[in-house]
Image 1 (cartoon, rainbow, N blue to C red):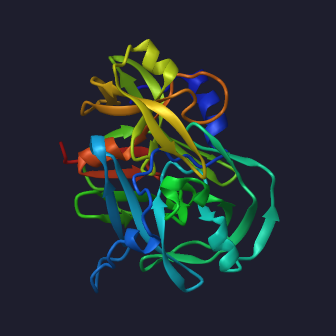
Image 2 (tube, one colour):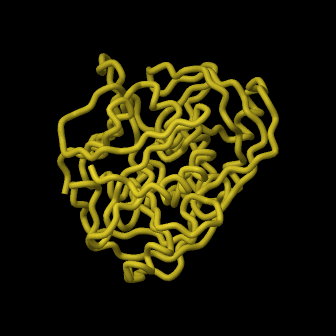
Length: 316
């Protein structure tokens, strides 16, 4: 593993560790019930989850799981390792009368924009047949983003970290908890702050770096900061793309990344959104987000929280 550059990493995490991060969503104007994956067959292995893989241009992908809250549902939630905290759609939390733990007037940083966080509520829930820890979850008006209005919440790294690892088989539409398959791996930084969890991988671009990239299954597209795109003269391939983050939208261009790698793992040439501040905040940094468009091309992507590794198995 290359050592992450100290100062950019520290400044980036000071922003991202306080909020959920999600980039482009590919589920515009879709009903909630149409997003749900099929249940697993009987006698599925313990710790295995069914996920629906939603696909879009440039290998864009998102993962949706079946979540029940207090026995009600199921509701579609994004499997979002880039979310430092899990989130429930505010109207759903109100409709289910989830107990209010505290009220807050803070803001959540998303990819390129911010949104209001109104309350923390106690949630008792399950994803598939797996019980999730009862935790305090932030509520956000996800419906204010037209592209994500059908999604009812985010299952973030604050949850998956408790299981040790999350392995996603994009081809089969299956996720596994606590299992780390063999494959190419790169050391990552797992940063935990007041119950919020962020996973950061070292990514080289054009043979230079490494730069801190958040490992984000909840981002359908990878993201590079405009500062990083300018430094490496990345070619613009689309001038204007709508970016839907947590409860808000913004605009970005899309650039081509031809030579990049995570540690010693070469990544396939692909597309990335070009945002001024991918992780929120106001300071220009050479940082980014490693999204599901790249992770899905590996076949199976595993975030090994306990072992501080990202493992990629198979794929192109």
